[in-house]
Image (cartoon, rainbow, N blue to C red; front, side):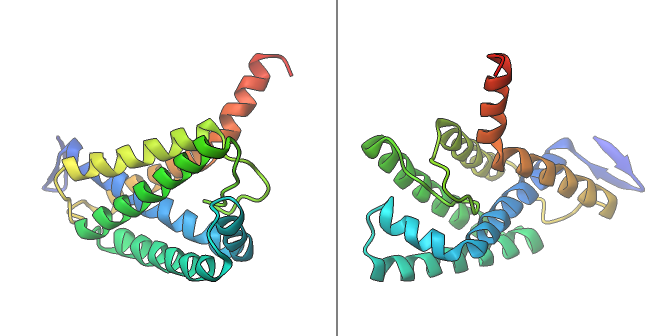
Length: 183
């Protein structure tokens, strides 16, 4: 436990806040990326996931609106129901991605606004790690932002760093493999 001006903060509370910010920023980054490449996102729903164009428009708008709303709720309130819904959405989209990846061998997904990059095993690993973060948060006590402001800023900053690594995991891993092989 850490004492901070009369407030006793357990490590579980700090970890819960880092994970909450991490999940909120992951959803924020996903919504931001899809918004920047909205036409491409709709196109990939049709091409990679074989969703008819009429439905891909509605689905893309719905996914995008839900991601923005959930990100804002998680970042501002940390409401556990929003985290459960977000975890369900992310898990569902990840299962569909995995299924299409296994069925076709190569698909493109603009999960975070990427363009013209096929999904790799590391993207699937990334999604698995994010799903594990959702589950980990649900196993911890819901902190409801009981932390001192400086600890909230620190946990949010740490979460941003983890989100950047997570989003770029495929590129990082492929670069490390190339360096190890001397390319």
